[in-house]
Length: 295
Image (cartoon, rainbow, N blue to C red):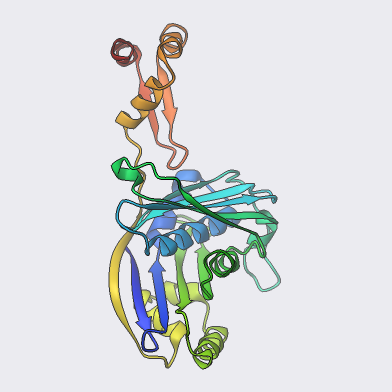
């Protein structure tokens, strides 16, 4: 099971969140059949979403949406405090070669566009408060830098974000995936900031460490270096969708009696597909007729 852990360092001046998301991203890639480059972009968004959502309250959820002008067109990641993550890409087949340093060229399939973070309070318990929506222009397309830019510009939190996905040429395709988010607390010592920047600059590749067996606390140690820290919280992370036959039935019923009657007469049934996980829900004539009677 993937893990996300939260640490506090530098006498409370630094908050660090780190996650191993290899299984989570593998499941997302499997469900959406993404190309290698799209898999790397998608995995980074799923991981970043999980890290951001770790600060939510119970029953809240967070959505990261990238509206991209590049070939991938868009990426969505949704997560909650409990570590449940799901998402999709608008063009899963978008692909590119590698950069001069041998990395998948995520920037080229994302391009410019807008980066949104949507926070919804109490959604899963029936509260329908207006969501908070923050947005910034995409500055990188590499995604980690865009998360950091959003945190600084929209939430005034100076941050460093590392996100990585290592792709195989054969199944299960995702060899390693994870991320680290370093957040400086208000009034943090500038010397501490410089130390962390220097440590991150000299740190080994994130996915190499994960591929060699590093856990979340190892990633925290990697980015903080000599700065003392302690881990204060931990939770599991997984690709988990909230769709169900009951919810699919509710959506069909919401189309109205005339539309459902038309489905029954013309199509002899109905099929609903979840955009987040690609699960398919099939309703035959008998089920649809029963639903029609209840509308």
